[in-house]
Length: 230
Image (cartoon, rainbow, N blue to C red; front, side):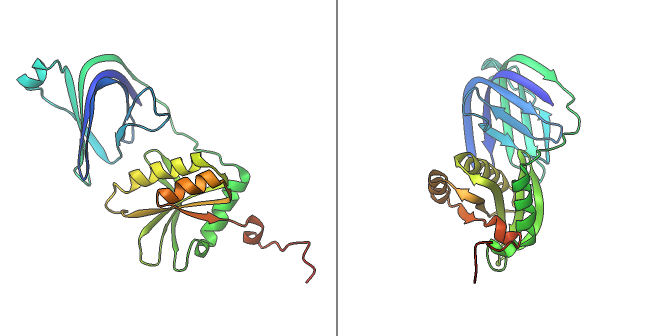
């Protein structure tokens, strides 16, 4: 991974256009080709990014750029969509590269991991006609628990929690923003599935068009209520 701290501006051009004015930011260039632009606020969500597969090339500066004080410029181009992210650097404060090796991945809570396995096997609980595409569908910012398709063939991203809070909804929102940039997946709808969903999380999810699904862990495991006499 290459980490650059720089005084920079960023322009994104694709299905949507976005501009980040000049400011100091952290630029993360990952070995999978993804590029993420971070500020010192806004928690863990990047201000902008380009997901793989993409290529980064140095831009030859013209007189206007040089006169504006730009010392280096990058163009990151998505290989499938041709979307472009242009980073203009006015000053580089730090530039380092680090070999991180192969990451073992997130080790989930035992119940969450089992819920994921069970829901993948019982994908019809998400809705009639739903089919499983795969578990742990990898994105540039982490794996989505389950990628499925609904009865019409549209993509559905499912995030699973034991107890569903606002953080889980935010996590799924980031996945959806990224996945909906991929024309092979878009449009992608979201399902937030948990044994228990907090009221604030449900309100936020529904406001963002994310469907909530309560999971009965015992029923999914085929366990009957031991207190039931008849």
